[in-house]
Image (cartoon, rainbow, N blue to C red; front, side, top):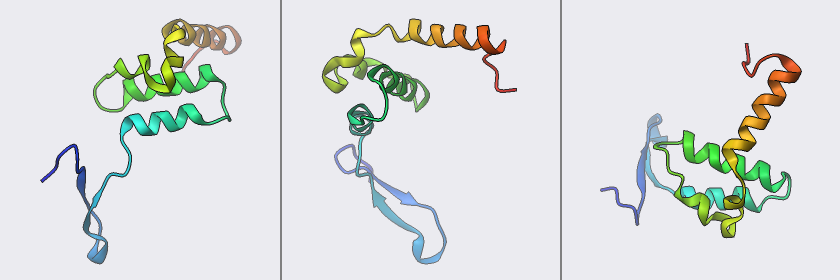
Length: 98
């Protein structure tokens, strides 16, 4: 039986690879990992976190206030996304991948 304390799932595969397994990470722990990496700016990392909270499962934005010690709360991420859209429209005519 699934529970939040013991998040097991069925790994659908063939033969001996069909088995149950358990999650090792939570969404919050994965997002904390994103925020800890030095390869991106703090704003870029916060935008990745925002995209994850919006596009994985149900929209769940509450962690933005506390993840990474609240570092993402200082940004207006919707305004930052609009700046990115404006840049692409100005320089490439569209934000579409077509």
